[in-house]
Image 1 (cartoon, one colour):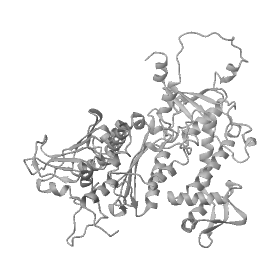
Image 2 (cartoon, one colour):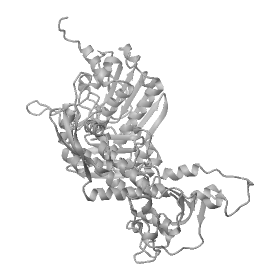
Image 3 (cartoon, rainbow, N blue to C red):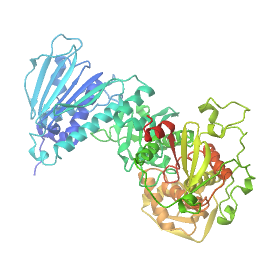
Image 4 (cartoon, helix red, strand yellow):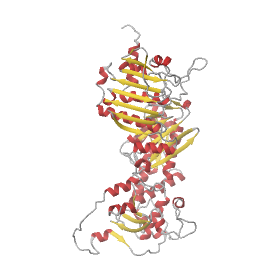
Length: 628
């Protein structure tokens, strides 16, 4: 077949296949145009899942009459300005849109109508495009002093085959709602209203710019639980700033649907950013749990390429290591600052499990030797704390690898370092009432596993095994950080065959891997030689380990597999070396555990992200008995 030049209509329809995949894609492009135009009140309407009708109305600067015909031409845009030589710098893009493809692409597959009034004009004008055919300009009524109203009807009517690939109207409406939520998260100072089939689905007033306004917007979109369990993120490194909010580990999810990432105000889906988020929570969550986070990355446009895909949902960084290091460091700093804090949903879930009883059930007579009596070990007075070595007798015989060291509490000792900043009742050099500690004073033990403690305004229930497991794990991590990881030399160095590109990636990280106890070196094209492995891994699958590391380097830019395997070994060792369920503890032992939890970061969750304690406030208990 001879080479032919495609018609402009065909070119636009091809572009529409990339830019306008579904109604939510069209709405995304039109909302970004409204934001670039300076709109502060944006209204979105969608009928029939967006396939029947879409309306985007804004109060931006509008489009002048003379420029309306240009707005629907392919690759015509007001967002890129050439220099004196006529060249356009695609590396310094400060707007959300810039390709000039959205309006002509939509007009080629639907019935498009643009009504607008410019700030500098007194009259409003409308231009219409149906399946690529343009109608002349005409005067039109307009409700506001300036802005634009873009209406799209019968989306994909000009390409009926595309309609067969659309999902149900409900699924398309949900995709539209998710898209508007992402745009609203990134622009808290803009008011959004979304109506689906004539019913208001979302109404968000404009918030004050900044962290406080952003959190209010996120609370409206993600719920008050996110607001109550979110940690503020605000770190900057080498001109790159990371801000936003990340959830506590105990406020995790079963999938990554609650992870929102933005680069210069643009919603993106990036493997590097998702991998960094996973790496930051690697010590706190199991593989099947995912953190909730809304993160905003502000970076010089020169150091990020947004012109990777027509939909602009993917980006590339000039220095990905810097970006990843900033994300991991900022998140871990916030998690460390959270201390032993656990999510509020833990207490809410516990309260939901209580069932009030209106009658008295009869049962066997009470006996001190009955199982229920043995399940609760209490006491009437405080015994003097024993020496630190006697707090948990026999623990060293149970585990030769881990030697926990609990400091015996003294009721005249000072509170934890961070306690005074959280509670005004703490005064320097004054005796401390045990009830004033964050986790209170131990009052008993239930079923030889759960410590019950009383606080000034409620009670705390602690899983002794999970809590001590976390304490041992944190101590082991600190020891690893203080010195080099013990390595074991292989009797025979092992050669691992890889793809040449994979082998090069692994060999290039040899220094980083050596810090974790893995000694590798290049072994010709497409292979690496492994001489030593971390001793704590024991007899490990070297081939599988190296291949997993190669996959992590390709996907996330970091060797997460080795870190996670070492973390798993640490977790296993900590589990075997911690206080077991079923162990009867004395009062000093329980209080020593509580005090160490207060002084240890991340002690609010075990190594798998589950809570180590539940706190119930007094008003929660009063609700159970109808006092409130």
